Every structure is written in structure tokens, then in C-alpha cells.
Length: 207
Image (tube, rainbow, N blue to C red; front, side, top):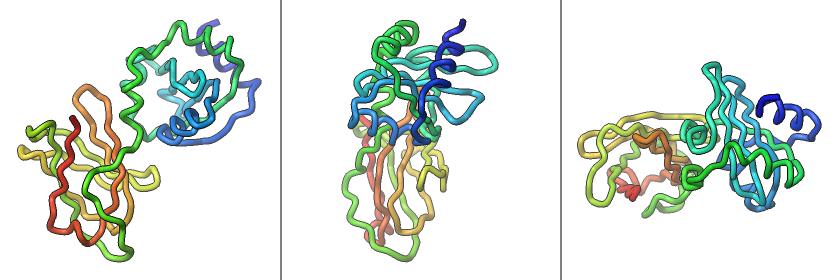
């Protein structure tokens, strides 16, 4: 049996929980220190994340062209995927992880929301233009795709200018900002857009 067939047979015998977006899955897994397999709702390509004591220790990506394992599989996650989680016994998961271990856990940690600095509480009603400058240290980052999400849905996309700037027309509310880096990883930040930010440029340092 292939690793996919083995995991599918184990999943078929387990009670699933979900679906959850990958960020919520990571937070919930760590809070509950779960052990098992998370399988993406999306079938082609389909991801499998293996959790041990709440930490994502293994990953497999199965697509038409073949399979990818470990870091390579995780690099291709966009952060918009949804997963169902299937609890399994520790010894089973430990054996599965041997062939697909994630060595750089920071890849997934970058998908967890963190706060953009200098953002005030939200005020309801109205809309405006949210402007942001993406830098690394003091260097503006040019040509990066930046997405704005609300409730897991993308509500805006833009590419950073030579000055590292992007702008979006948004309702006053709370959002997630996703910065897509050149190494195919992503950084996710939570922010609240309110009237005080109109005419301002929020500086986001991804160092």
C-alpha cells in the first residue's frame, strides 16, 4: 500500500472533525495537543498534515503529477485550504511521520495570524482606502502579492509597488492580510480597518 492508501484507510475508520481553515486548525491542534491526520477538503491537490502532541510534524501533498513530502509539501499551502481532522493513536502517527517529516516548522508558523502594529480598534459603518507599505528592515519590497481576507474569503489582491505600497478599498471591519513571499511561503497578519487609518500608510515590517 502507498502512504496515501494507508492514511485513507486510517481516516475511513476515524471520526472526523471540521472543516477548519489551516490557521484555525493549527491553533486548535496546539491548544488541545491532538494527535492524528488533517486531510484537506480540496481533493486535487490534496494535503495531509500529521500532528503529534499538537504540533504539525509531517506533511504529504498528493496531486496528479505525484506526491511531495515534508517541507516541500507545506511550501505550496496557500493558507486558504480547509481541513478535516481525524484523531489517531500516537504510535501510528509516529510511523507515518518518518517518511514525511516537516523539518522547518516556521513555514506553518508564518500562517498564524499576528497583529500589524499601530492599528486602532474598529469603528462600525463606512468604507475607505486602506494603504500599507511592506518592508524588510528599511528596504521596501517590490512585486509581492498581498491579499486581504475576510472570513476565509479573499476580498482584495494587489502587488507592491517599487515603494512597497499596496492599497485596497475596504469596509471598516477586521481582516487578515496575507503577504505571499518569493519562496512560496506566506505571512498572515490580522488588522482592523477604521476611519483613523484613512490617509495613513501602515508600515508592515516582515523581518
